[in-house]
Length: 455
Image (tube, rainbow, N blue to C red; front, side):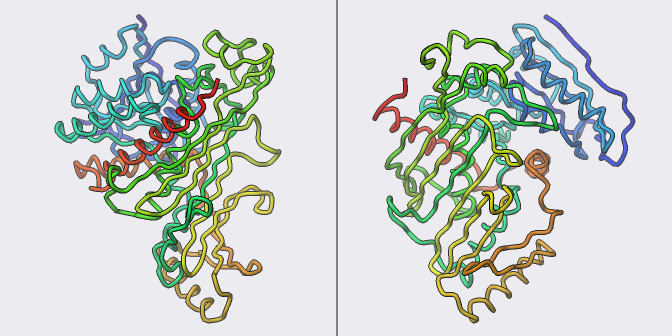
C-alpha cells in the first residue's frame, strides 16, 4: 500500500479557482488507465474542489495519469492547480468506497473492469461520470441496465462522456437537421442505401496534450478494451440518436432493430506496437492474435447496420496505425433529408478539418433564399456562421472561435454534468438513450461474433 500526496503550487492565472467547501463537487478518480481520465481535469471549473482523490494500482498507467495532471498544473497558459491524493493499495476499490472522500467517481481505463466499478460505485450511492464505453459485452449490458435502475432508486447520476456532441460541425448538423424548411424530413433509406452513414477513423499512434501517447498493452486486447463497435462505436450511435431524434426518449425494445454487423482486423507490426506501448514484445494475452511472431492482428474495425425508429443506419468504426502527415482522427457523417443532405467531411480537400456541407435536392434561388434565412436563425446561437457556394452544395463557414478541439470538449461535458448535478437529475431522455446506445453496440457485437468470431 502506498499513499501519495501529489500537488503543484504553481500560481494560477486566468483560470477559474475551485473552492473547497461542503457544496463543492469532489472528484474521485478510480484506476485511470486511459488518458481521458486526465482530460476531465485539463481545465478547472467553478464548483469543483481542487483536491482529487485517486485510487488505483501502482504502475505506469497511474504514473502517466499523474504526469498529465502535473503538466496541466505547470503549463504557462491558464495553469490548473489540482492536488492529487493517491492511494495504491491492492484494496483500492474497497478503500475508495469505505472512505467516500468525494461525490463524483471518474472512470476512464481498462473496460474489462469498468462495469464492475460502475456497479460498486452506484451501489454505494455515488455519482459516476464514466468514459465510454460503459459496457463492452452483452453480459456487461445486462449489468449496466440494472445499474441505471439502481442509480434512479438511489438518486445518483450515472452518465457517460460523449464529447462528440460538443464538436461544432456536429452541433450545426443537428441544428440544420431540425429545420424542416432546409432539411425536410429524415429519409427512411434502406440497408443498402441507408439514410444515415457515419464513419470514424482513429489512430493508435497519436499526440495528447502535445506529447506522443503511450498506450497500455491491454488497449489491443478486445477482452479488455472492447471491439471497435462496442468502443468507438458508442460515440457514433450516440450521435445518430442525438442528431436525428434530439430530446426524444428511445425504447431499445421497440425502436431499434440490429440487422447486420461485422468485424475485421488491423495489422500492427512488432515495431509499431513497441512505438505505441514502449514494450518490445507482445504479452501473453495477445498471443492468440499474433501471426508469424511479428504481426498483431488487432481487433480494430467494425460495422453495424440497424434501424432506429424505422430509419436505416450504417456505422463504421476503424483503427489504423498512424494518421497521414498533418491529419488526425477523422469523422464522416451523412444525413439524408427530403429537401437536402447534410454531410460532414474531413478529408484532404478539407485539410483534414471537419467541414459541414448542405447539398440541396434542387439547386435553385428559392432554396438559396430559404437557406440564408435559416443561417440567420443559426446566428442567434452561433454568431458569425456564414455560407459559401461549393459547386452544387453550400459549405458552412464556421468561425475559428468555435473550433476548440477534442481535448477541450471534456471540459464542456463536465459543464453539462455539473448542471445536471445541480438540478439533481438528468434530462428524461438521457438514461433511455444511454441504455439504447449500449444495447445497440453489444447486440451488434453479439451478431458479428455469431457469424464469424475473429481469431
